[in-house]
Structure formats: C-alpha cells, structure tokens
Image 1 (cartoon, one colour):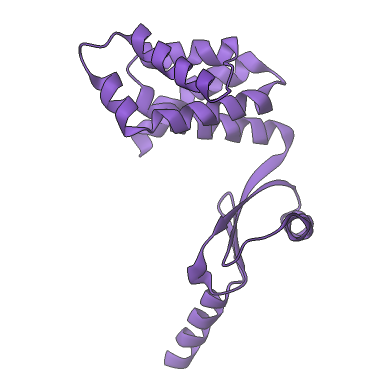
Image 2: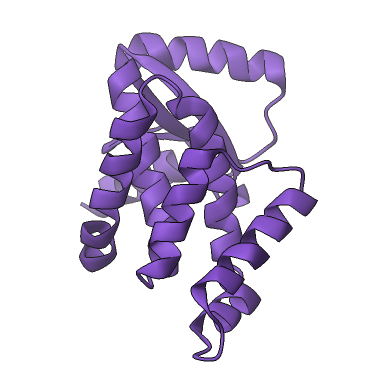
Length: 179
C-alpha cells in the first residue's frame, strides 16, 4: 500500500496547510467522506466511464448531506480535486495521513485500545490517564472489541504496542515451557 500512501500524502499535506488550526473539525468530515468512499456501490458508480466527475461529487455530497454532514468549503475543494484526478480510492488514506498531521501538530497520538470486553466511560478515562503517563503524551483513545484476547487489553500507539492481554501471557508461558 505504499503507492496509495504516496498518492495520498500531497493531498493530506495541502489540506493541512490550508486549514491551519481547524484540523480537528475537518478531520471528522474527512473521516466521514472516507467511509463513504469505501462503499462498493459508490466505487462502482465512480469508476463508470459514463459518469462525469461532477456527478460523482454531487452524489457523495448528497449522501453526506442526508447523513447530516455539511461539507466545509475546504473539504469540498479537496473532494473535487480527488475526484477530478481519479483518486477517490485514496481518500481513506488521505484522511489517515491528515489526522496524523493534525495529531502531530497538537502533540496528540491516536491510541487503539483492544479489549475482550466493552469498556465504559469511567474505565476508559482511568485507562487513558494511565496510558498517557506510560506513553508520556496526550492520547486520543479508540476502543475495539477483540474476544480472542480473553482478558486484559492490548494498546497500539503509533508503532508502540503494550500487550497485557491473557492471550499474550499464555503465549509467553507456552514459549517458556517449550524452550
């Protein structure tokens, strides 16, 4: 996927330079558009040679509006540029790279917390505070449920992984016993 990342980088950087301090709100819009762009029906529609780029833009903007998403002018301009250049499939990667730029500028990192069971708001606040002390930076946590962990949590922050799951402990014990 290095090719998609290479294609997405200039778009993400251009939008980031354009928005200044408004990156968080535009990031949410961009994430919504990226999820729309992953729709198989929309991909098929956009790839049709009979469909003009303006029609693709109108359909995406219409679907976004029906979901309560009012596109910012800057986000709309990015979407037009992406569609005009035939890069709609790169939109999810553009959103990912844009969010990484916004996070880096504000000193925040995304944290994926994988848990075997749902985590309520109080527990998430406690876990987030402990993880911020552990990783020594502000975190933007997102919880994913993974029943295969059996218990405990697995945290991914950038390229760092903290695995305190029961599955990881069992794997360590298995390795120790077979060595």
